[in-house]
Length: 139
Image 1 (tube, rainbow, N blue to C red):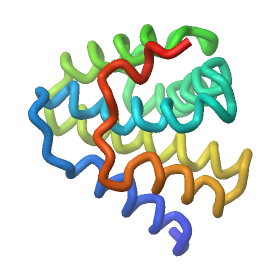
Image 2: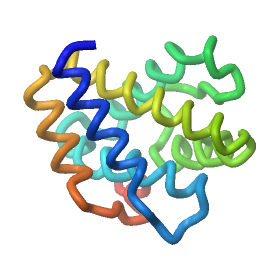
Image 3: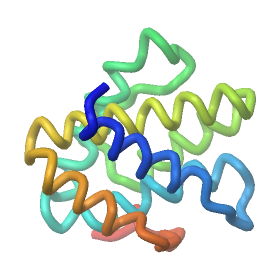
Image 4: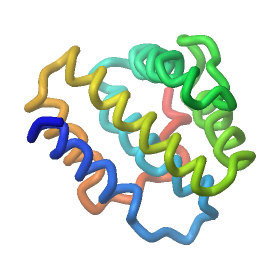
């Protein structure tokens, strides 16, 4: 793992460690909602969903209990499915899978737009911001 991966990993772990009043499964969605809020204007909801779909397919062997839906699903459906999957899993298993999903998503995004922009977008999306619950419902 190089320094760039370390920076992304630190950002992901810091976001996941943020306290919140919601239940554990809903807290897992906070980074996703915030990412969607910041990335959707740039790559569109379909682009976000496609990137998330690819992420899920890459991790399907490791976390077979995660639902891999169509790459073109609306964000609210994507987040609802992820919430249901994480809520059914053991807490440690859900946390591990969510971290792996976020890390893979960030790596794929880096391959598309570059390290600097990815890190800046993730940092902006997560820097002390609690995402609103309806971020996945934007049209």
